[in-house]
Image 1: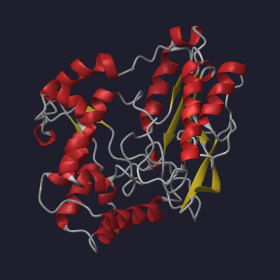
Image 2 (image 1 turned 60 degrees about the vertical axis):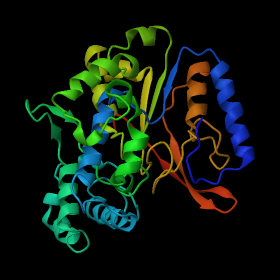
Image 3 (image 1 turned 45 degrees about the vertical axis):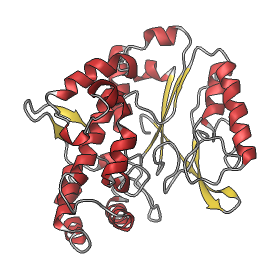
Length: 337
């Protein structure tokens, strides 16, 4: 279990997490628990998505964004779309950013705001980022666009603007097939993507929507996504579940063994301006019960047959002595009701 960087975690917390995951490793569940993950999106397409994001900000000089610029732009987006996306006036995040159907850079009000603190190259990079990316030859859609609302989170615009670090830390699966000198700036989406899918998909992807065998074995699938995750856009979960419903007799049948909860404002696995954690890290500041902790929810569902109908994420405040409980935010259960 890897701990997030720069999070003041006590040794006691680390021991608790270690014990919890040793326990669940030993329990022989016929279950599968997915935290913010790559299953619905597919790992072999996720990596090209990072190529798209990174190249948008690094292929031309002057496009990179600094932390203060990413934060200010994020605040502009949240202010403009917050109510439209189902949020409350005081929310510092977007609750359902997939409701935004326009490219924010084509919105006159937002474009005018961006001109006050971003240069032309940066604005063009953002325009590319929020556009659907398609195969340059066939025109087929490759991956969902970058969801507004996650710009200033970890792995967001600042991370992908750092070309050297980004290239070093994020593309190890592509080095397995393209060699140690793989350059994401030279990735050809028409030529190289089929090769990446062919080589990586058998070992990294789980895209078959027919989960009959998993269900018959007693499996339980708990999906947790964040509305502010900059690298795993949650509409991928929705798309996967719709496909599963189509081949398994409807959403009602799927819901008997699958649950997908969307945590408002949660970034990638941990952190964010809304939910900070939902038990994925195992900090003591998060209540250890099935409503607040995904591991407890999974345990109760698998061992007692009680499916999670409600989950609540926790916003933590970082202090010198470690994370402290600040607020609870209810998650959305898909399909939204």
